[in-house]
Length: 272
Image (cartoon, rainbow, N blue to C red; front, side):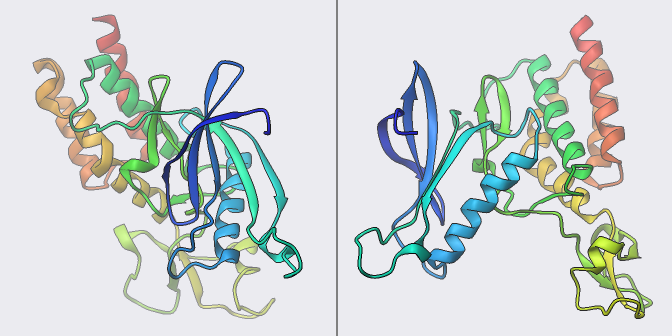
């Protein structure tokens, strides 16, 4: 970590972190570190927690459309400050591959690139739905939380990602679940994290499948409707693409079906 030469400081950041640009062995790197400027409504413990959560999440999730983390360093935390030393601020940092900001609405893409990027993002949604940690929701879904890295659109911010599905109550006759997802009983692991007593009847349920639906909805509105705009595609592909996008917009297509549809379109245009 100490051998990385920082050339630009605070080129970006959020509520808990700032980003520096560094060089190591001829490679450009992004170095995230805890911001020392206090953000309103967020204390040191919360900021430490979110940054450490991002590091741990990135260590557990592996997909080509998630930013690569090369390593991290935790030297000390805010809690270690005893008032008798000058190391008041936490020292946490992590090193990631470098990416560039882009605007999907204005950037030029070839037909093959549009389909490739759309397929990779759809595959990311599919992976998050069946990840080792369960079905993951990108809670803070923003365009600037994705960068272009070596011609791949990658998710760079993981501190607001969650495997908790929308909650519901089993004893209510009307559905409370977004996207008309079913309200289902909790599994053993989910039940252990609620207030329900072991062995007792529990009315708490979960809206099974909502996380992937939210991810589909947000991915469509942020990227896919621009990448797959039918008017820029050859006439022979517009009808099938329009139908696929309509089902995606209405959230009436499973992510696996959407991925397979994009694979078929990409094959057609790659051959052409």
